[in-house]
Image (cartoon, rainbow, N blue to C red; front, top):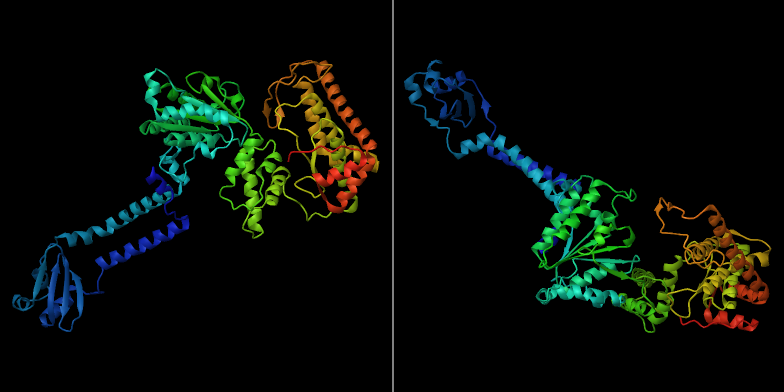
Length: 626
């Protein structure tokens, strides 16, 4: 595993660098050949000239090498000629009038064409180009392998793409101490850890550990991190890949990769195989929705076969993660495969505080940071959201050339994650600033006047993200269930901004678009999902939704008359909420004016400042824990 990692981190050359290296290599080889095969330039002469030199006694030496005759004159001039293949040198010169006595006075050397040098010179022009092409191809393929280039994929279709984490690699090791919250989920997985550590005690009593563990839950709740923690706690190799990495355009490739993955895990067992986003290959077969194809189904079948093929004594656990457990094929979920399902929920306030502390370990924190307050301001945040929050705080600190993260940095990052970055550069005309101020003040006044609405924590008219301003309300307590009364008050709060615009300016704007959309969704869910309609009763009119290209394709399991009643009930809830908001705005119009004018002056009101204003107009402030 370490060699594989070194190979991935090896020296990688770009395409143009490869071309330059190849050209230089060719030049070097050509030069070497020239040195081996070349020499000083020799004059080419005919045999009659050589005969004249012999008769005149002007030759210092004669070398006969096959059919080639090299002669050196007394003045050092070197000349070369060719004789006829079928005749000897002496016979050739006799034809040109050279006598035997004259020839005997000339030093003649006869060379035999043999030895490694002769064959090297002879074969080098043939061998060099072949060697060059072989080396060039090997060089390019080696670079593509090191760079992970697509050109090498043709040679590794059936190989698994899994990344393997070595249990001895302390830098990448993750344990349960690195995973805050999800106490129940970790407790469920302790059996898997214990089995991988000490399988014998389970085998001795005839117990069978689950072959597959399916982690489900909202995005960002730490499914992958928890799977890594199981491997870290057990100290076993961790094979990690995504479900989409099995699928290629060629049928059979995914199944081959599954076999290779499981063979690799068996070779180093005990081990954990983790398939992230398993719904990419594990969707229900035969439904005609979700992009099903033969390749995906063959891959799924191979996963099922491999899990069935586990012997009772094999120390391999398959873990998988998905956000859409509802779309998985039933064969995956039956006993003997992914028969243990662990649900990871969004963290509560206590868990959020612990998660923030973990993500703050590597960051220099200033004194006075209160993670309890931050946790109270982040209901509904996932672990990934909290990690992003702390990262944003560190980025702001570095951008401002400071060395410590402050409480203000963290709190501002909360708003950035929720609403987006501030847009202070946007300059609004005074009319628009007035509208935003009264709109946000309207939300706040209605929320403070209603019994079941959350207390107001902050109001601002500084644009952030797509919003011209916003009102932050936080619950007094962390709650898992919301009552009908709370939903009705929430609808009224959402229309507080629209009501304020209508009453103050005798006109309405499009600024309430998001409020109206959210209120409509809540009202429809109250009627069709949660059975909160008195006229329609506790009947579910919205089954599981099937979405294609953003459109709801689920069949309507009710009549047109019921659909009309649903629309009427939703409209009634919306109209009632707007009417309640208008009544509150009229009743506390002076408080609305005071809050709006203060917002126009300072742009942002914190909870204490806001409560001090509304207390003067007969509204009892609600105290938030944040």
